[in-house]
Every structure is written in C-alpha cells, then in structure tokens.
Length: 119
Image 1 (spheres, rainbow, N blue to C red):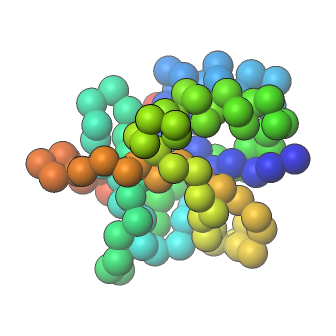
Image 2: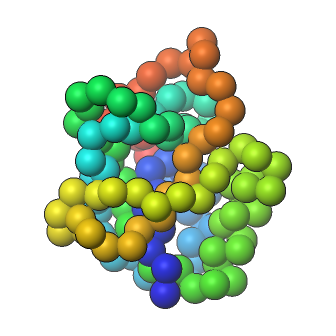
C-alpha cells in the first residue's frame, strides 16, 4: 500500500484526521532539508524550497487505493491546489517510496511556520 507523509490537519488530533479513518499509522517522520511550511489560514501548505532548513515534521501513513483517491480529492489535486509527489524523508524512512502533498499556489505574503504545524 502507498505511504503518505502528512504534516498538517491530517495528522492525529488534526481537524481533518478523519480523512485517514481506517488507514494505518506507520510512524512520525521528518523531511530532509529543502521544504518549508506556510500558514494558509486553517491549514498549512508545504512547498519545496532550497536552503538549509531542518525539514518538516509529520506522520507517515499506509493508505489503500480508495483512501488515496479520497485524499487527492480532499487536497484539491485536480484543481491545482496541491500536487502529490515523492518526498525524501530522514531515516528510518529514507529511501522508502513515500509521497506527500506540495502546495502549488503562491505563498507570497504568507507566514512561514518553520518545521511543524500544531495540532
């Protein structure tokens, strides 16, 4: 089953965690450097960004194909809001095929959050 890295409202205790009902929590994780979180109001957006950063913290979930389709719809993939892409994580997830949702819209004027979104 596909592995998905979540970093915002989909995390355990998050306001949209119900989107992962019935799926398997694999563990907490952190991306390698090169990603930033921005405050988009009620949820965060992660964007690829060069520079020395500590990475973004989140969770890895094993999801079935139906859940993956639901997540794509929830994240607005077809509308161009987010794109599901491979993400490089630090060990113990380094080298594993994990995907995440990157925010595709402008973050100009948005507040940078650092490495984590509070739940």
